[in-house]
Image (cartoon, rainbow, N blue to C red; front, side):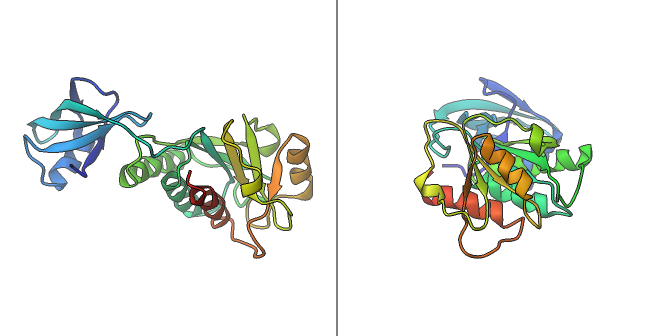
Length: 230
């Protein structure tokens, strides 16, 4: 079974790859007749064979569809406050490996940053794509432009990482509806922000007795879900 995977727009009997993916094939030293996997980023994956391989173009022939079981029963969204530097890159990469369907960036009262440029947002989306390939997922999470916390609307359940909360995620999580998890910036969410989320139906949950860094908390929260077998 081939371990090489490439992203395609759609699964079709014949699929043409552009220069970026073709460069990847050349780096892997693949040749005409070699097998690989193709996925569309929306959950579909199949085997394929290289039929044509040129310097900047390749044609793949579709094989058998692959059944995937790597996704959660309902969509899982990570909502995370804007962070400085490359911290968001690390969070998006780990969140993709841990099964999120989307990452919602948030502007909060104590956020390390107030905005994010289009170029950095594109880079975060590319990181999600590469992490999906590496972790053998058929879904590429969407990294959504930041919105103010007070204006963010979610569907299903929302669990907010909050030091001191008596509630634990394991006793509340229910996969009958979409699941959202939220972590704040360095310094945490303000009391007003937490109160507003709870009034809207969110649950505050503990991540243990220690205070975690802003880039560690989302990984710990998603890791707790993954440890439950999801």
